[in-house]
Length: 425
Image 1 (cartoon, rainbow, N blue to C red):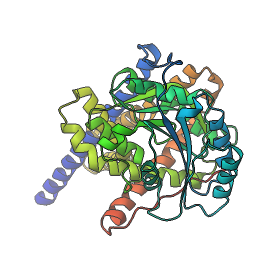
Image 2 (cartoon, helix red, strand yellow):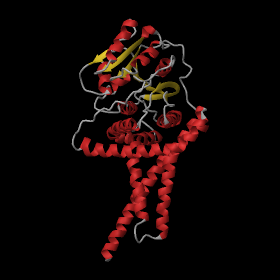
Image 3 (cartoon, rainbow, N blue to C red):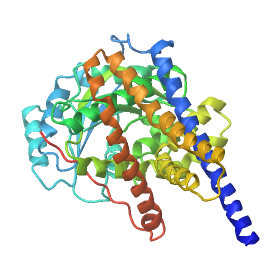
Image 4 (cartoon, helix red, strand yellow):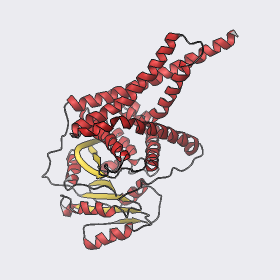
């Protein structure tokens, strides 16, 4: 009987230590969210390249990643043809990756209508996926800079100059603009995703830019210096999140990524929950690939200061927080109801459950509230409580993706499949 009691106590102690570690980690992330929010509200804002409008602009290739995009590709091409960028230095290259719909036909019609303006890259074979298509297309260009858009994006007239301007700084390897949903009025989900995007770009990305931390190249509405891209090995076609992978390869090679908060581009966000869930699954697996490849290198690199390294590792590990939070909830509940626990101990674990839930979940919501304030569209704040349901969906979906990735993709050596996000226009 004594042995059983001692074993139970050791188990309770082990579970207690695990819970406290999870609580501590969530508090670190919460502090990071609050720091970013306070910086955006009260700190000095960095927009170092905003005023560059007249310059000797470098040669530029704009790539439009397209796979079965007949619904949206015409809109993107039409916007880019109106771009305020010297036509003799601009190449518009739709990267048509194995489309089976009318995407190729639509692109070729534009080529006929605008001779000399569009140089399509039609890809009918090869490894599937956006990164593989970009890799093949990059071998055919001769420009200094690449700007990448997904096919559903509608770039404003002045966006290309804004994304290219930071490259006059020779240390800049990549740039990133702000993504703004254009179908936010469709239903509740699109409105919630609009709030999420606002928090992520208006607060999170800009604060990291302000604090000289780790702004992230986002894979679309972003530019890459060709020389920098080649110096880090080009596009890697064995990853789902080629943007996160490239962000860290550039960072670890001492190239800067610049975020331009005023450089807005408009996208479609998912309008149904199944599409949203598949998008989160893809992001999770791709982001965790980058964590496995670059996490230790980021933590131990000598070319970046301590705050940069902490932020870099925290950004890589963000998707691992979902299963940890689920484990934390279960641990706190189990310990609370464990027989023989002192009343004080039970109260402590109940407090832990409530505190890290509040600090972790609502720190991110604080970012969204600040973003709504900074955007000047305060009526949207009434939807903020409903983001909790979106948060729960994300927690479950991310945890499911990680279990699938570990149990099937790694153990069974299963090839990760690219899931294209559905279009609605």
